[in-house]
Image (cartoon, rainbow, N blue to C red):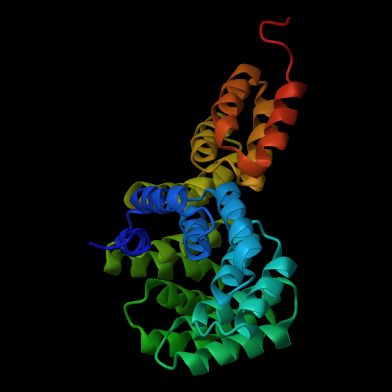
Length: 323
């Protein structure tokens, strides 16, 4: 019979994150200072979107056993989710220095450096990832992103093409290559080219649908962009598409629809600060005080690190029934 940690790892690999938490908490009830179990709990909670619980488990793991390659990578992932790029970069550097040999750590380090404007550092990390995973597509996509940020469109297209060659079925790499090639076309031709591609793929590539939405938004066609994001959300159901749908509806001036979409997204992801601020401001524009109050009260128990912001927004609202 597998021990608690083995069972938790099996459940994690199978995608049963709730079951993994139960197994790990059972193990920790018997062995509270089991550092590997705490580190795994931090990872599973992060995957579940429970950032506060993840950070608490990580602190306990490192207090017992110190930093490890695994715990440092999780710290990097936590900081990255919180958009703290400098802290995330330091954590990924620590993981690499401590012996982490995954391409993920190097690619995340490259993405952080890219966000921070360190193009040379980003390129170096991504190039190391490409050496480590010669057949993988993702390092070449990141190298393409770096070239694009530097304004070298020829190099960006070449990197995306290399990624697509290595993984022809990788929808993200394909979408990036398409987007790079579209940049060479006159603006009025770009929508048509993407529409043709989407017809040929049966709209299976959600990333191409995002390309179409961004093209429309870039041209100021926010209602059309909202339609594209909404179709992706209907077909694929991903939270990111639903958020983008709500933001596009807001920019298009369709505030009632935007409030309904963004409120639903906030209920699923109450720790997204940009979404939270946008929703609060939007409901203020609409004068929807009671609707805002209900949403804030609903998300409060799951707001984690954003609990203070939710309390603050609730305190600013007039008393219920106040005229």
